Image 1 (cartoon, rainbow, N blue to C red):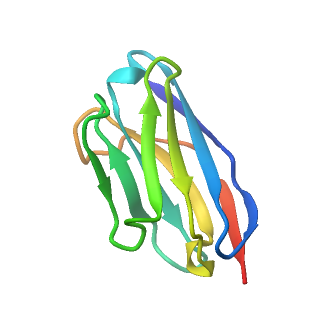
Image 2: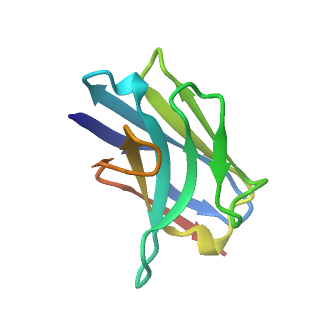
Length: 118
C-alpha cells in the first residue's frame, strides 16, 4: 500500500506560478512511478505529467509542455509539480498517483485545488 498526500494548491493569477508537492509513504514507495492528473469541473480526469521511479524520464501532456516540470526527491519520498505561466484552463483539482507497473495507476491522493484567475 502507498499513501499519497498532496499540498501546495491555491489561488493564483494567470501567468503566475505554483508548486505542488506529493508526499508518498508506505512500503517501498520510492520504487513507484509517480504522476500528476487533474480534473476540471464537468470534465474527465486527465493526465498531466509523470516520472519514472528512477527520475530519469519524464512525460507531459501536450497542454502543459514547456510550462510544467515534474521532479522527484526519493530521499524525501516526494514528487513535485512546478507550474509556471498558469492559464485559467489549468484550473482543476490536481491528483497525485503512484504506479508499480508503468501506466497502471493504483494509488491516488485526495487531490488539491488549483484555481487560476484571469
